[in-house]
Length: 121
Image (cartoon, rainbow, N blue to C red; front, side):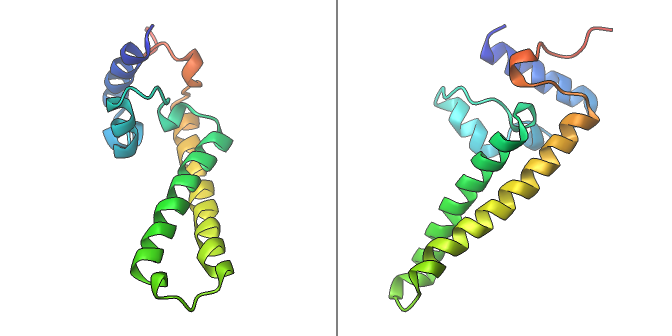
Protein backbone atom coordinates (compact mmCIF):
# COMPACT_ATOMS: atom_id res chain seq x y z
CA UNK A 1 0.00 0.00 0.00
CA UNK A 2 1.46 3.37 -1.02
CA UNK A 3 1.52 6.42 1.23
CA UNK A 4 -1.34 8.14 -0.61
CA UNK A 5 -3.44 4.96 -0.46
CA UNK A 6 -2.77 4.75 3.27
CA UNK A 7 -3.86 8.37 3.70
CA UNK A 8 -7.12 7.72 1.83
CA UNK A 9 -7.74 4.60 3.92
CA UNK A 10 -6.96 6.56 7.08
CA UNK A 11 -9.50 9.26 6.22
CA UNK A 12 -12.22 6.65 5.65
CA UNK A 13 -11.21 4.77 8.82
CA UNK A 14 -11.21 7.94 10.95
CA UNK A 15 -14.60 9.01 9.56
CA UNK A 16 -16.04 5.62 10.56
CA UNK A 17 -14.56 6.00 14.07
CA UNK A 18 -15.80 9.58 14.44
CA UNK A 19 -12.28 11.04 14.74
CA UNK A 20 -12.01 14.63 13.56
CA UNK A 21 -10.18 15.13 10.24
CA UNK A 22 -8.04 17.77 12.00
CA UNK A 23 -6.86 15.15 14.51
CA UNK A 24 -5.85 12.79 11.74
CA UNK A 25 -4.39 15.43 9.50
CA UNK A 26 -3.56 18.81 11.05
CA UNK A 27 -3.21 21.70 8.62
CA UNK A 28 0.58 21.72 8.83
CA UNK A 29 0.64 18.04 7.87
CA UNK A 30 -1.71 18.68 4.94
CA UNK A 31 0.65 21.36 3.64
CA UNK A 32 3.58 18.96 3.95
CA UNK A 33 1.64 16.26 2.09
CA UNK A 34 0.70 18.79 -0.61
CA UNK A 35 4.42 19.29 -1.22
CA UNK A 36 4.88 15.49 -1.33
CA UNK A 37 6.75 15.30 1.99
CA UNK A 38 5.97 11.79 3.25
CA UNK A 39 5.42 12.41 6.96
CA UNK A 40 3.06 10.00 8.77
CA UNK A 41 -0.05 11.32 10.53
CA UNK A 42 0.57 12.22 14.18
CA UNK A 43 -1.59 9.45 15.64
CA UNK A 44 0.59 6.84 13.95
CA UNK A 45 3.90 8.18 15.29
CA UNK A 46 5.66 7.15 18.53
CA UNK A 47 5.44 9.44 21.58
CA UNK A 48 8.96 10.87 21.23
CA UNK A 49 8.49 11.69 17.54
CA UNK A 50 5.23 13.53 18.20
CA UNK A 51 6.76 15.43 21.11
CA UNK A 52 9.86 16.46 19.14
CA UNK A 53 8.02 17.40 15.93
CA UNK A 54 5.17 19.36 17.47
CA UNK A 55 7.28 20.84 20.26
CA UNK A 56 10.01 21.89 17.84
CA UNK A 57 7.54 23.52 15.46
CA UNK A 58 5.76 25.27 18.34
CA UNK A 59 9.05 26.56 19.77
CA UNK A 60 10.21 27.96 16.44
CA UNK A 61 6.93 29.64 15.51
CA UNK A 62 6.19 30.97 18.99
CA UNK A 63 9.76 32.24 19.32
CA UNK A 64 9.57 34.02 15.95
CA UNK A 65 6.21 35.53 16.83
CA UNK A 66 7.45 36.78 20.20
CA UNK A 67 10.61 38.17 18.61
CA UNK A 68 8.72 40.06 15.94
CA UNK A 69 6.02 41.41 18.25
CA UNK A 70 7.76 41.99 21.58
CA UNK A 71 11.47 41.25 21.77
CA UNK A 72 12.88 42.90 18.64
CA UNK A 73 13.23 46.28 20.40
CA UNK A 74 15.91 44.76 22.62
CA UNK A 75 16.31 44.73 26.35
CA UNK A 76 15.48 41.05 26.77
CA UNK A 77 18.09 38.65 27.97
CA UNK A 78 19.21 35.92 25.57
CA UNK A 79 17.98 33.39 28.15
CA UNK A 80 14.47 34.76 27.73
CA UNK A 81 14.64 34.99 23.94
CA UNK A 82 15.97 31.44 23.52
CA UNK A 83 14.84 29.69 26.70
CA UNK A 84 11.17 30.62 26.85
CA UNK A 85 10.31 29.34 23.36
CA UNK A 86 12.19 26.11 24.09
CA UNK A 87 10.36 25.65 27.38
CA UNK A 88 6.99 26.44 25.79
CA UNK A 89 7.74 24.10 22.88
CA UNK A 90 8.78 21.27 25.21
CA UNK A 91 5.59 21.66 27.24
CA UNK A 92 3.41 21.84 24.12
CA UNK A 93 5.15 18.82 22.58
CA UNK A 94 4.75 16.73 25.74
CA UNK A 95 1.06 17.56 26.16
CA UNK A 96 0.34 17.03 22.47
CA UNK A 97 2.17 13.69 22.43
CA UNK A 98 0.20 12.50 25.47
CA UNK A 99 -3.08 13.49 23.78
CA UNK A 100 -2.20 11.90 20.44
CA UNK A 101 -0.96 8.63 21.97
CA UNK A 102 -4.14 8.45 24.09
CA UNK A 103 -6.21 8.65 20.91
CA UNK A 104 -4.06 5.96 19.29
CA UNK A 105 -4.48 3.67 22.33
CA UNK A 106 -8.24 4.30 22.50
CA UNK A 107 -8.74 3.21 18.90
CA UNK A 108 -5.94 0.62 18.90
CA UNK A 109 -4.07 2.29 16.03
CA UNK A 110 -0.70 0.81 15.06
CA UNK A 111 2.40 2.65 13.92
CA UNK A 112 2.28 3.95 10.34
CA UNK A 113 4.53 1.20 8.98
CA UNK A 114 2.06 -1.42 10.27
CA UNK A 115 -1.12 0.39 9.21
CA UNK A 116 -3.11 -1.22 6.39
CA UNK A 117 -6.38 0.65 6.63
CA UNK A 118 -9.46 -0.14 8.69
CA UNK A 119 -9.61 -3.64 10.16
CA UNK A 120 -11.60 -6.06 8.06
CA UNK A 121 -14.58 -7.47 9.93
